[in-house]
Image 1 (cartoon, rainbow, N blue to C red):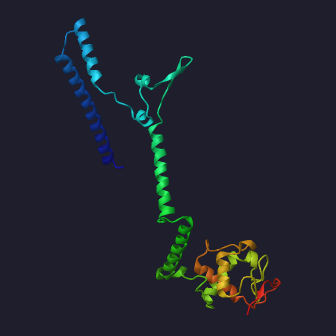
Image 2: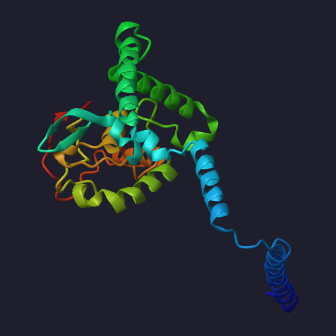
Amino acid sequence: MSYADLMVVVLLITALIILIVAVMMFNLIKLYANGTLNTLPFPNADERERQRLAAAAEAALITPKVPLFNRLMGLKPLSEEHELVMEHTFDGIAELDNPTPRWFMVLFYGSIIFAAGYLLHYEVLGSGKNQEQEYVAELEQAARDKEAFLLNPANAASAVNENNIEQSKDAVIIQSGAALYANRCTPCHGAAGEGIVGPNLTDEFWLHGGGVKDVFKVIKYGVPEKGMVAWEKSLSAQQIADITNYVLSLQGSKPANAKAPQGDKQP
């Protein structure tokens, strides 16, 4: 903040203080003037009594203001509790016939009206969807949204999926898949795909199918019951496709210490 800005702020604060002091002085002068101009002699006993009676009569005409809390709770002031006393007493103790609070009655009757409307909407007229129908509708909408997403040219990098992927032997794709494989797949499948915890990826035997779509699907969704994690949350569709093409490129490479075949032989 520059010096000029600081001075503006100081002047504004000073002006505000002067304004507040001026308003206070004006109110003080006004109060003093009213006290000076409207001096009244002390009333005698009769005048005081007349004033008291007039004030009482005026107060009787004023309807007492019932607090909002009392209105919501359906309560009456202490001065009117005698109207609620029930006829029977026990050991000189009287019982008050307090009504049910209004807010409770509103909720009670409101719940009845809501239940009737709910029954008509979902069970009688059938105009509302139940949970199963909503679930099916959301699945259908998700499928339509997915299709629209994949058809959008702007989403070309994510357009590939397990239904439309095709095997590629492009060197750039294979190289990209090899780098991704080295960072994520070697702990289970080995650096050359020979298999460690996971199966051997270089032979003709596959546990879940050896086609390009099968391999893509396994990488994307995983096989949790066998320890294969799903990579769809941490890898893009294109990255999964690159790994898929790299894995298929390992066929017949016959690495050292290859794990024994598992699964079914694929043509």
